[in-house]
Amino acid sequence: MAEYKTAQAASVLGDPRFFERAGPFTLAELEKICGGAASRPEVLGGRCLTGVAALQTAGRAEVAVLHNPRYAAAAERTEAGVVIVSADLAGRLPPGSVPLVVADPHQGWARIARLFHPLPQRQPGVHPTAIVDASASVDPSAAIGPYAVIGARVQIAASCEIGPGVVIGDGVVLGQGCRVGPLASISHAILGERVYIYPGARIGQDGFGFAMTATGFLTVPQLGRVMLHDDVEVGANSTIDRGASHDTVIGAGTRIDNLIQIGHNVQLGRNCVMAGQSGIAGSVTLEDFVQVGAQAGLAGHFTVGARARIGAQAGVMSDVPAGADVIGSPALPVREYFRNVAVLRRLARRGTAAPVSGAPARAAGSEEAAG
Image (tube, rainbow, N blue to C red):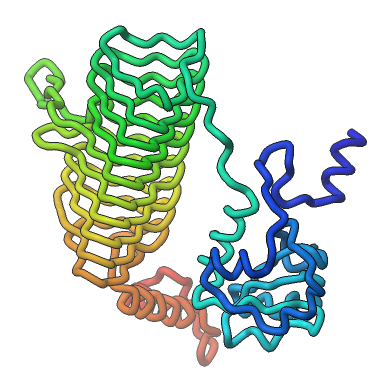
């Protein structure tokens, strides 16, 4: 308990018990990694930077970030040695902090935080408890963790990392630099390079396909694959069904959050984003750069155009044009949805208004309120 209270009080960002640490680094090294330019560097007095921290807790040897104007007040009081900031907010920093001006502070923070906290070093080799089929091809630079099971004809390329308890089914292909978290399973799938499967994810299981008969359900064979292109990430405990009549495809760079369901034959374009607990039914196509909010549900057999945005908890049942923003269930364009909300509010207020000339007030939900 005493150790817990000490750790809680310290509020360490990048606790060394859990995160690799590197550094210290010079200001010039930080400028190079994020493509920024520092002003008044003399404030540092030649000190190196030792880590990253929040604006409110950073010390003179640490780097913080100001990427949202809402935190400008905290930036004015910060003791950080360096603050990553956009040009328009650089003037909000105190004289004791060096502004490191970048075009995109959030991106700059990502690069510098990764510099101080690199990914853990991979230990190549196959753990003695792992089971690897004799016909599998595993590059010597790959790391296979404890109790992993690698099936027949599996191909695992260079620099891959397979976590404890992972099951990789027969014939699966992993491109260079893939990482698979503990207890995930992959079958009927081909992965590109640098794909990251988080713990507990399920890739390539049967899709939800069946035919009705007079006596019950008849399962339809799911004969497609899952194709994960380069740099895809699949969050913890998410599921991606293999195709039924053609492949389920996840385009390059797409990010899939935790607890997400993607049905059979779904086609996701490049750099799509799906937030937690959202789901897509079979045979939906999302074109490039589509964003899907948390807990949104997409029914089957339609297309969402490029750069469309689906709001949180939206229920989408038909095509969405490219670039559209939709919300609600059934989903509507954002302006139309909020116009409808405003009308309903006016009707509700009218239905609960005070009685006129002694007449009894109508309750909300009466004929008048229903319009």
